Structure formats: C-alpha cells, structure tokens
Amino acid sequence: MIVGGVVLYIGFSDRPAPVRGEKPAAEKPKESGKSKPVSRPRPKPAAPDHVETDPQGTSEVAVVSAPVSPDGGRIALVIDDLGRSVADLDTIEHLDVPVSYAVLPYEEETQPVVEALHKRHEEVLLHLPMEPANGEDPGPGALRLGMTPEQLRQLTLAALRAVPGAVGVNNHMGSGLSADERSMKTILLVLAGRGLFFLDSRTSAQSVGYQTAIRTGVPAAERQVFLDSDTQPEAIRAQFNRLLGLARTRGAAVAIGHPHPETLAVLAEEVPKAKALGYEFVPVSYLLDRPDSQEAADSSDE
Image 1 (cartoon, one colour):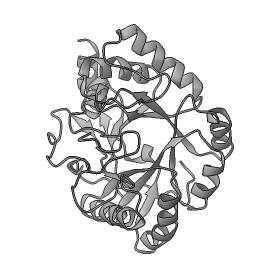
Image 2 (cartoon, rainbow, N blue to C red; image 1 turned 180 degrees about the vertical axis):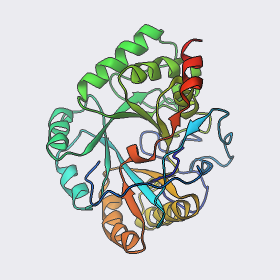
Image 3 (cartoon, one colour; image 1 turned 60 degrees about the horizontal axis):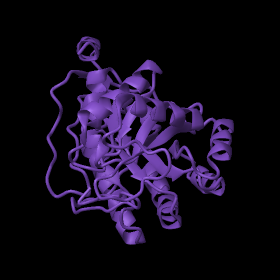
Image 4 (cartoon, rainbow, N blue to C red; image 1 turned 90 degrees about the vertical axis):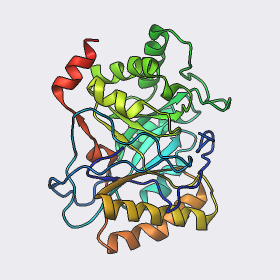
C-alpha cells in the first residue's frame, strides 16, 4: 500500500490481471523537479488487480504517512524484471520522469545493469525472487516456504550483495511465501538492519508483506496497479488510466510494469499526457508509509 503518493499499477477494473512469471495469479530517481511534499491523509489501499475479492483493508498498525502533492496525484512507476539487458534502460530513461528500477539478482546482465543505473543516479530496488503459489519457477536464489530462518536470512543477504546499492526490495513472484508471516518477518528484519524499505508487489491478496514490514519497523508501500498483466496496448492503456484515477482520488498511487516493448511504448505516449494534466511522477521511495517507532519496537521484541 502506498500512502501519500502514487506508484504505477494501472487499470480501472478489478478483473484478474495475470503477470508474467507471476503476474496476477488466481495470484529514481531520475528526478525532474522534486517538489516539497505537503501532508495529507493516507488513502486506503486498492484491491489487487488480479483478484476479485478485496483483501483485508488497512492493517491495524500505526504508520506515519508520506506527504502528498497539493496540486495533483503523485505516481510512482516501478519497472520489474530488470537485469537481462542493459538496452532496456535507455528506453525507460527516455520517459524523462523518475522511475524505480527493480533488478533481479542473478540474471546474465545484473552487474552491468546495476552499474549503469548507479552511473545514471537512478533508484535501484532488489527484485527478490520468492516462491509463488502456482508452482512456477521464480528463478535462481529464490526464497521458499519451509526454509529455516537462517536459510532465508543468508539468501536475502546474498541477493542484496548481487544488487549493491539497492535502497529497497520488492518481491518477484512470491504469492506463496509472501502470505507466510514468519518467513516475511525474517526477511524484513534483514532489511530493517540495513535501513532498506519494502515494496509489496501484491502478487496475492493474502500477502502479509506490507503489514509485517510496518510492524517490523521497515518503511513500506504497496503497489496499486499492474500495468501489463495483459500486454495488449489497449489493456496497458486501460491500466494506466486506472492508475491516474487512483492517484487523483487517493492522492498517490504505485504502479508496477515490465520492460516489454508494448509497455514502454504505451508509457512513452501516456506519461507526457499525464504530466500535462498535473500528475507528478516520483520515485517509489517518496511514497512510503513509515512505522510508528513504538509499534516497531514492540514487534521486534516478540
């Protein structure tokens, strides 16, 4: 869930949105003109795109919400599944708005992709592979149900070393693991010790990632829209319009997309229009909910 900001997940309907790898399963900043945020109440989370039922609403934990722009909705665009091609970065950069880049830890070009992003002063997230509920392969180094806390901790640390300089983490797939509070708390304590934030990709309505992060003392956000579970241009455009609607009514929204040619082509057309309408694009780190310090302290002592 993102408060006081918008992260790109798009679409106006709540129909199931399948994501490649685990797009909904019956599951930077390149800053152009930062603006000083102004405080505004935190919106309630949108239902995941890929499920028909609304997951439990807001969690019963105290948070300090990210501020919202007074002049229009704020949008955070997160591009997942990076690490396979440095060439992807050039097309994304041409959007000319802040984008958060989520990089898989063990892809063929992970290292050059991370190096290129740091040279460009972009916001980098570790896209951490986790076990899905649908049996698909999340890739090498995945965190799985049934692993011991020490195994989960060591795999998380290894993935962070593979994506040096990451300022936050979001889950790749993970509809299975993200619903297990004990496993998620182990992972999130690693992030807490390193001052990193967590973006819950919400690949499942049963995910406890966001709530557990807040309770564990980790700044966190949730995606509201998957842009390209369906890669048809009109479907992506509909999701983007949904994103704009959420950002307008809630103050901010977070969207996740992938470096598909169709996704980037639609964004190249629609982002300038959204800017002209007064929407502000920000890194996802601008839209974090921050834990109440006492709540987090109580949780870490459990």
